[in-house]
Every structure is written in C-alpha cells, then in structure tokens.
Length: 303
Ligand code: ADP
Ligand code: MG
Image (cartoon, rainbow, N blue to C red):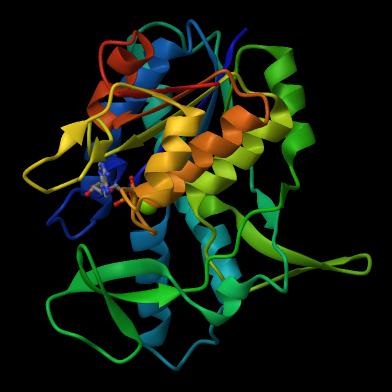
C-alpha cells in the first residue's frame, strides 16, 4: 500500500489566540484526525507532529519552581512525544470507532530519537521558537511572526534511529504509526553512546528524513495556509498549485519562504522528492483529504 506521511503543524493542536488547554488541543485534533482515520482505508499512514508550544510550556512549568530538579530540553521533547502521542492516539481511536475501523487498524506511538551533528552551526545560532508568544520583549526572546518568543537551537536531522521499527510496521499492513514527534529527540553519537542534546529539531525536516529512510511515497505537510504563495502577504501575492523541484529551489533562493516557517517546509519537500519520494503536498489542516484528491493545496513534483 502507498505510504503517506502527514506532518501536523502547530495549529492541529493549538489555534491562534488559544491558551493551549488540554480541552482545546483535543478539540482541535478532531479536524485532522477524522480525515486521517478515513485515509487509513487507502494509505499506510505515518503521522508526525510539532511540539513548539508544548515543549515551551513544559520549560516554563519547571522554571516556575526550584523544589524539583530540572530536566534537560531533550527530555522535555521526549515528554511531548508522550503527551501529544496520547492525545493523537485516543482521538484516532474514537474516530476509527466512529467509522467502524477500530477492529482492523492498529496504531502505536514510537518514541523517536534523531541523530544530529554536534558541529551543526545551529548550536551557536538558536532559531526555533518555542512556548507562548508575547507582545513585549523578554531577555533571550526574539521577535517572530507570532510575537516575541524564546528560541532554541534547531540542528538538522541526520538520521531517524527508529526507521527500521517503523518500516517493519508499515510492511505488516494495517498499522498507523505516530513518530518523530516534535522533530524527534535530538541525540549525538559519542563512540558507542547516544547522548541527548538540548535542541528542538524541525518536524518538517525530520518527517522528510523519515520518509526517505522508510521509502514513503507521499509527504503531506498540514499547516494553517491552504497553499504556498509567492510574495506572501504582499499585494502581488500569488498562490501556487503545481511546483516542480527546480521551481521550488528557485523560489526558495529568491527568499519567498522564510526560515522558521515556510522555508523548512519547502526544503523538506525538496529533500523528500530528491531522495525518492513521489508526491509532496503543502496544505491546511482542514484540507488534508481534499489535497490528496488534488482538490486543494500546493503540489510538488519531481523534475
Ligand atoms: P506549522 O506550525 O504548521 O509548522 P509555521 O507557522 O511554522 O506552521 O508555518 C506556516 C506559516 O508560514 C503560515 O502561517 C504563513 O504565515 C507562513 N508563510 C511564510 N511564507 C509563506 C508563503 N510563501 N506562503 C504561505 N505561507 C507562508
Ligand atoms: Mg513550523
């Protein structure tokens, strides 16, 4: 069966202006997960997701007291794989029951760690925004499109360690795998030892790497815009429907896709298609199913 990776963006869990309560996150997840339950009839599914707001919240929670010892960032990333994996799984369970597929589909959240290069320049140049956005600056915060936010290093994913487990599950058929949460737990290899490092990997780049390693057919990145645009937000903005790899590279070089938002998505798509992926789509959380039927989204193709 065709292997489809769906990377869920931040708005799958927390919508603009929300506080990010557990109730809100469960409610929001219903939108993508109901479509994914349906899609599991036609595709072998891998679901990946971000964790920017959630990992930032965990950091703030532990900073709120000195009575318990603090966990390093990579352990907090692992915690978000657990909390978000749980919310996705239980929503998926309900949605599969609703359409009578709960007996046939099996699903699992795979704790995923991802190799990064200790020499990655990102360690000296933090760019990944996490946690809530503020109207006013705070020490260590930078201005982002959403407001002032804390930023942490975001090294490039080099290898997904659990790719074999995930591939094996895909081969068995009937499995839905939730993996690479928050871009994966960043680790570096020191001799025969894997050590976690304090960073948050981009989930779109990690999804693309996972797609390459398991030989996925389609990568769909679900975010809060239905299509990718040239001159985004300007009067001459133009939405794109079909884009070749070479066009995507040209537009990326021309600066149409900023780092930290659309940039890594387009980069992820290019990598995926260059490493054997067949189709890649960027669309909104609401249009996942329509986009797969080519009724929505920006579609990227090889050549
Ligand atoms: P996610 O949480 O899904 O990863 P991001 O905020 O990182 O979402 O990226 C999606 C955002 O990228 C959109 O909300 C949009 O504001 C922004 N964006 C930047 N450039 C473009 C572009 N050229 N076309 C479409 N959206 C763009
Ligand atoms: Mg993002």
